[in-house]
Amino acid sequence: MTHAEIGALLGDPSRGDEVLASINPEGGAALAKALRKSFKRGDEQGNERRLRAVVTLEGEGALDVIKAVLEDKVVVGGVYSNLRNVALELMQARFKGHPKLEKSLWRAVELDEYLEIDRLYEVAAAYDEPRAMELLLPPGEQGVPAALQLLAKHAAPKVAELLDAALASDPAKASRFIEALGATALDPELARRIIPLADKLPAAAEVACRNDPARARTTADQLSSKDARWRAAAMKALGFLPAGEVFERLSPLFMAVDRTKRAQVDAVLWSAIALEDARWLKFLVARLETEEQKPMRGMLVRALGKVGPAATAAIALAPKGDGDTGVLKELPLVLGRLKGALRLVGHWEQERAGVLSVLGEAAASVKTKKHKKLLERALEALAS
Image 1: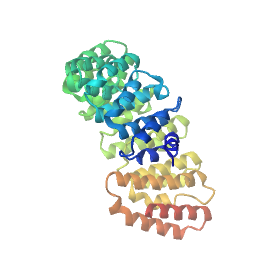
Image 2 (image 1 turned 30 degrees about the horizontal axis):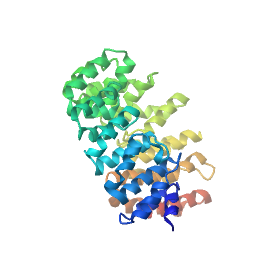
Image 3 (image 1 turned 90 degrees about the horizontal axis):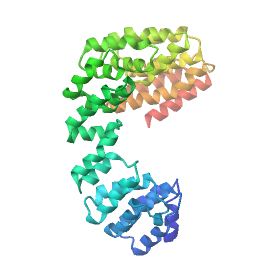
Image 4 (image 1 turned 180 degrees about the vertical axis):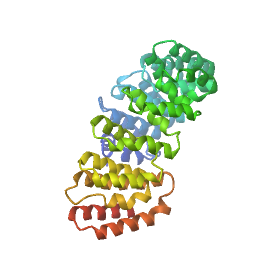
């Protein structure tokens, strides 16, 4: 493969990453020269790989290319925010505080409002920490999460000041700002300002729920609210309630006959809410026996997947023959998610044999062709 072909392949969506990974730092000046010539206008991902490859080959010799990216020079096939952010990443990893790049960095700040603020701050702080801190203020005022987290770490009083300004504005802006704070909102000084608004702002209610079971129950009462923001807050509040209470609040939704309630069921199934109460298995199996509508039957099988390994047999035997398309469609997905969930908490290996045994027995007992084949394929996939 010629050097020019390597440069071209770095722009190949299917092979570019593989080619980049194969670049040898000792590849030599001739390869580096060819890659410099291979930058192509409009080929964003390819140019990002080419920039990384040139730096790999040349090290500090590639500073002129980094400068060209930061300063908007056409030598690199056109410049755009993604390419500048790659340049920042390379500076952060290899050239932090390099004197030859300082002027170009500040020029990039002037040119581009879409630089990744967390990376930009770290790179800029190596040159001028106060000036880097100033860069955090505009995105902080706009509620950019990364900027707020950095401000909380390096200038906590400023975050409190920005929060006060947001709370003094309209409710929508205040909610967005609290949401942007994320875990930072739990800081005692910030939480003290936010929690009194829990009756008015869903985002404030979410913060209050974390350490107040009574508030979690009050917020969970909004599960059927007409306001989507309150329904979302109610879902999160359920995560702070006992498993039995979660069952009592959510099980009526699974009796739903109207589209609105079913949308709420779907939201439950996509949420992180665990269905841990022992009553869920019997309840969902009973619902499957009586439910006839295909979309709802599919949802019930997905719910069984959230119950865990104890529901394996119920999931495997849920289809009422090959015409039960709503359930058959969900079957392999639910079993795959069951394995994924167990892996996530480190329980797959201890549950693996039991799950496979139950699936094997179910596959042997099923008579209908499509159902049997799906179970056999799922068994093979889970065993691998």
